[in-house]
Image (tube, rainbow, N blue to C red; front, side, top):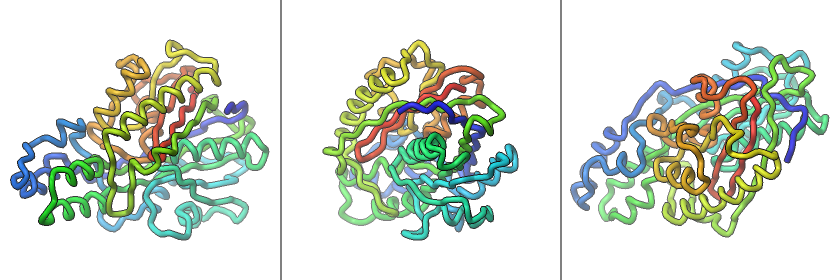
Length: 338
């Protein structure tokens, strides 16, 4: 896929205020650890996650998405053409219906001409939402669109801790639920516009997307539980990423030396190490943010982009690659010329 006229006009993040350390979770799980012989600090050692964030009690996913959207609008404004679409992309949902995007659009008092819908694609949701809006812009259906994600991990983490403290839980069950204990919370918003409405030149270039759906059951999540076959998920995800990276390079006509920053989905240490090794990425151009935020779902890749820009890792005119893997299995890689 290639985009010629799409600009990332603005990007904003909202970090939740409540920090929960991995040490906090392990203290809560100490009865299980003692009963089945798990050593202290094993969770942080295995995953590299020191802490994650929670929203305050009672804050919904739609609230988080609305707050980050308001921050973007307050700081950057909207183009004179207005918004043609609001797309919510979070893994987390408040309700089966209506779409979170409808709740956000209602909270923002957007006009009836603005479309609103959700895009669900696991941890690739935000990137898929960007592609959806960009495609609509290129096709002339809209001239500007807002992509949002409000991820929250409090409920699933607390439910998992309670479940793991039940009698009969063994080491295998702990392993199946380990990935849930790395989840964090985050909200992200991006404003995409047709180039004629842009006041910056941050280009969404396009990229590639591949799937390996024969592995679609390696990670199964609900609102209270996420079970993974972590070993196979990592192996097959990394292999798919290798094929997708080759396809993205060919589509965009770029080489690793052209890329200033590789913006990987923030899963954990094992995932980062394996991707860096398999894709032969330069370690100094890969940000590791999972250490203090955990796996923040669909918000992970855009949060990494925003952080890279804030830290000066990605500067004006430089190429950054957004590189995500989502349960399903699916992989997407998008180039942004900032």
